Image 1 (cartoon, rainbow, N blue to C red):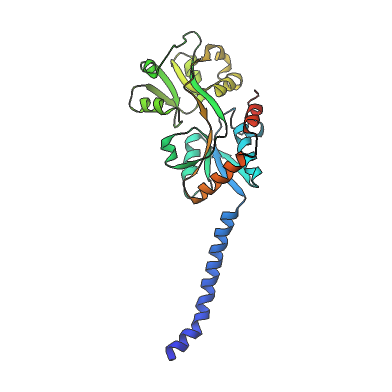
Image 2 (tube, rainbow, N blue to C red):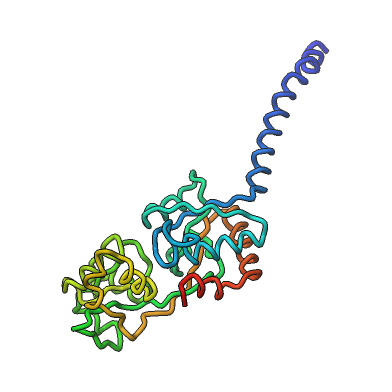
Length: 261
């Protein structure tokens, strides 16, 4: 009976802190789940995204509009591409994902892909004086091709780069590749046509040599653009919210206006 009396006496003292702790934990969980602010990373990839662009670029406009349609505010922070992806993947970061990204089976193993939020024509930039005629990627094998480090291109192209069938030289930006191409240090450079056209008009390094490069008429692929959300329950929740928001806005009109088309 003595032991029972002691337990009854101290139980409330134990229960109170436990209840408070549980309340705080539940409060944090509920607050997190109900947060109306979403944090994503992106990169300077004009004309699609960038700090210096009007409204940060049409890809950012589409993402913000879709979330706004669902009652959410999107905050985007810009980083170099590899850093943007790493922060989105980091389970300890505030970021729920990154964008814009092309589809990749390997990336899909680590992230939840959103619905399509735009598109861009992916192909090769070439020297105006030395155009390349190609039918299949077998024709590219002996050429020096520039790519951007950690960018997803196409499944077949990336597989050929990985196994050495295409001799690719990786750099950190499209601008660097295009300058190298214009100076004759590359035969081709993988690039989005809209990106190339924008850089030829605005990049100080490219302006003097812009006439030396052009876009090859044969596309690798008309690539779709997506947001990649963290591969967890919260990432899946936000992906579904975003996808629903996409149905409430005119993605094509926003992209077309933002690209000046």
